[in-house]
Length: 309
Length: 268
Image (cartoon, rainbow over all chains, first blue to last red; front, side, top):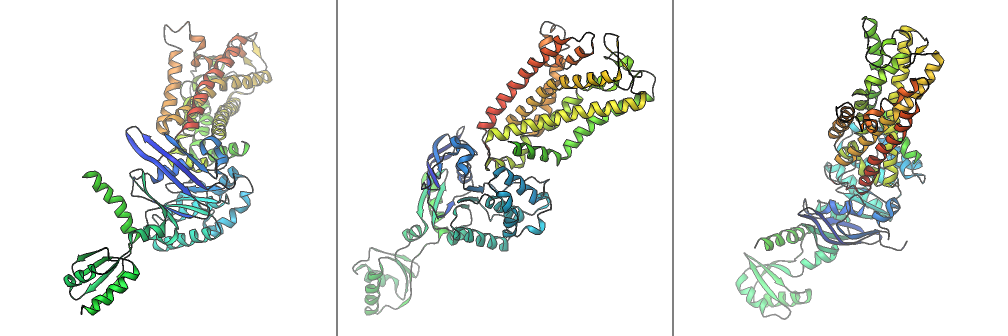
């Protein structure tokens, strides 16, 4: 049981009448992962996270958190699991500290003794006796993290933790996530902020219209869309002919004054020498890489166009 | 379970509506006494109404009667109808359901908290009503519904017993409030729905043509305490109220429990 992966979801489906919110989602989050869960608004991210936490029942499919099923094992399935979906919510008429005391009492297992430490960690000690109703959005997000850490989680599920924060708040949130990951906590991070995911996550899943369109290592995803080189040359048309004649060059695409050459590193070396011999000057040669944003848009929009076609 | 219940009560104590309900329960008999002090007539057509100026102990009995029509159902609905719906509205249901407590435990704690509030409201009315009545007309013997006189000390014991029996249909109303709060997840609809249910139950108990089933209607059980004020004590309505109210409470509680267990806590 203890060796089980933090999250294993298989064939998760959630249907609301005619609407298929989540369509056969498979997810695996391994220990130590900082797993980015990406998707446009309404793609099914939050619904999936709610199913993972047992807040909503899947129409079909299964969820295991460290090998336990939240629907059958109830609160026991959430041992070592914490987090929030669609932003943390608290009792507005209670203070931050009293909210944490309430949650610590529900958790037991000495959570009460950790209240001051988690308030300190999220820098809310000074405002802990104020009613949550008067807290800013950022303070509530931080209190949400504090409430999660009370449980000493081994798996933290965070749904858009930086949304609505100012730049400094976003930076602090990223720092905190990085620190928690450094302490060995597995993190499942749902986010719109691709830069954040690119910076923090080692693995990602991209969901579109309820379906996973990619799941795997982030580096692999970035590499899969890379490959090839961009060249800026004096005579693009002649250069194209020279390049096509070189071994290892699979294709050349002309984009204005730039050439995109499909080949590996060894082939581009040989090809650049050939261009020089042909008297074609090279003013720029850079490896072609894709940003996560380009990939995300490619994966989520191209399929929409395909579907529309 | 005790911890969850403790926090349900503490949450109620931190909300204005709790004090609004308890305050109303205490204020209504006090206002009633003040009004009677300034006029000569009285509620002669209600049980013990004609003896109201003979002893202050008659006040809470009279208040039990007239507050059953809408005041107590409304006071109960304010909290019971809100107890799950408010959590759904605030989004805090997902907060507590992702901690180390099972749904059944949380539901049970909410039911107990709603019941505790209802009990507190009825007791507050009885204590304040008796206090205000005695301040106005003294702590004197009471005339029973059979016309016999009972000592003031005995009347206090009868008041305690009557409040206990009166609580049974009140708790059935509270149970219905928790059910509708769980099902609708909407505070306003739950409060109004609970009140409407209570009024409907009262209405059915007085409608012509309902005589054969009248003893078994929930509205009738609000009068079961009259049995204590008869000489000798009439146990029939009291015993009937015991099992009937248990049934009237058990059905919505069982339904509410099942809904709560399977409730999808989706977007708020």
